[in-house]
Image 1 (cartoon, rainbow, N blue to C red):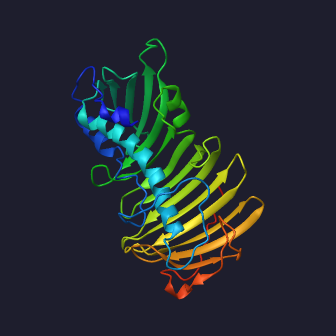
Image 2 (image 1 turned 90 degrees about the vertical axis):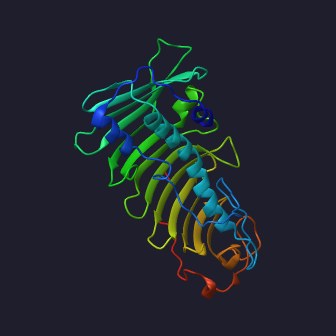
Image 3 (image 1 turned 180 degrees about the vertical axis):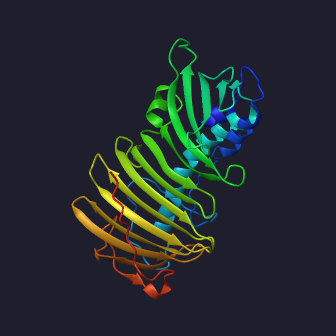
Length: 321
């Protein structure tokens, strides 16, 4: 995907497109429209996969702060790259064909292995825009275009502000040589940045970050708030090992927050609560139903719940498919 962004997608035939072209461009989601926030710090550690080493002690760096940031990064990076491609196609080049209710952008860079086609059309509701993105290998010019992404975008009052949904099929991208290490299907079932940002995602068949031969199904729900804090609720099901866990993270605008985690792995059922301070994001409170120091989940209670920005536990109700 990064390679695609580095190479200009040239339109074969330029045309005006009129009002519809401009409306379609304005409605398309951007990486700023569809992004997951997290507690911010230049020192942020990143983690991925379906486990996190956890035997926290008050005053140490917070593993669940790092997990919260890591989940946002793992989602934001590939989605941002994909949405950069969409915006590059629609904003930097004119469509190849247009009529009153549809525009098509089709072309490729000279050294690109695929020809890409983006079609944007007016939805039956008269307000939203339906779009599809597909590609055809240049080595097989007689082959059909392979559609690997599609969506619906409802414009808001400003450019690239609105709501909608879209799906990316990384397995189909893989047949075109553009998926990198990504696998499975990412379905953004809802996004909006009209007011505080909200995001709901189902991701099935994702490659496990710690064990590349294993696969995860993941549910995400993210919501920003009007004061600069946020809420991230997600659940993971490792379909190879059948391990499951879910985490609900909440944070204030200064970065302090809390994660409540529950899971089942290796035959053990676990619940954990951890609070972290503002930067440098150290553990303020830790509690686990496994009180022995039994990594990756166990450890004795440490710190005081009165130091938490959120003193009441709030576990996730989500279950990944």
